[in-house]
Length: 281
Ligand SMILES: Nc1ncnc2c1ncn2[C@@H]1O[C@H](COP(=O)(O)OP(=O)(O)OP(=O)(O)O)[C@@H](O)[C@H]1O
Ligand SMILES: [Mg+2]
Image 1: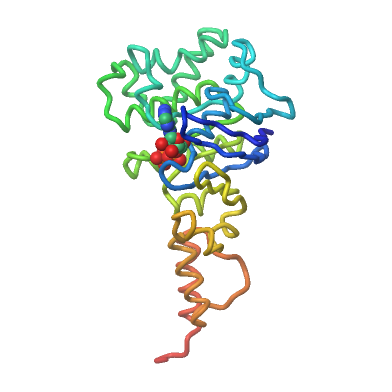
Image 2: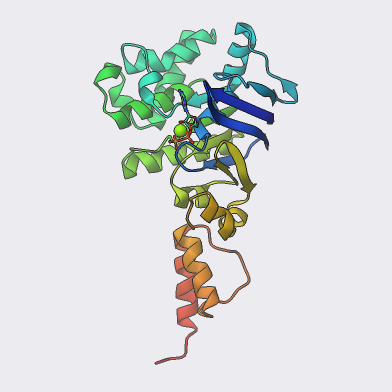
């Protein structure tokens, strides 16, 4: 659906992307991992044309994207982006105005705009902030408002740059839940995050970046079983996988069946094994 071919990008003299080639498949959830400065944000900003490759190209549905105004506005209709810093995303006076800005520009009817605004604010759990000035919101509330603004556009692809960083537990769960529901309706998601455990349980595919290049791409189990890759890219093993693999190695759990992705799956596996232990053993 989106493909990067040999993309290189520099900020002045800093090489931020170095010959990045990868393919994003329709309908999947991608987690983009990598140390600070690895190039995640720079890569994501290429996917909806905010940054333009110095060399190489980005293709959308097999067609190379172009950078004239019309093409960019079409692209951004299909590829929505939630930026790392919500300050740069919110520009209207109130939350409702901000979230309605995009849908208004799509030329939708007022009722449809209103429906989308109300639905996305509700989905993000910030309906009660509707009339609040955006510049008085807390950082987390700004992030939620930025997410609501993108959801209201109903794009086919959403690029999320650390969307849950700084959110409390409840809003974090809520936002993840929204993303999952969008994905079930066919929306492709690409999310950068430093939350390894979330990437492991949430993503269909994990992309690892290092020093502006793609160091690995695969299923979460493939990526997080690659000790060498984890070490060299400054990542660690998700807790669920680490505990599971250690118990297997020590013969306390039997191999076979699915490798657990979620805490509950792991706990049930351990409980099951414990019940089979001989009494008093
Ligand atoms: N506006 C800029 N001007 C100059 N250099 C920049 C700019 N933005 C990023 N860089 C550099 O480009 C490289 C990639 O940065 P990028 O922001 O893409 O990394 P990141 O993986 O998103 O990091 P983080 O996890 O900290 O968000 C880094 O070396 C960074 O210092
Ligand atoms: Mg970043």
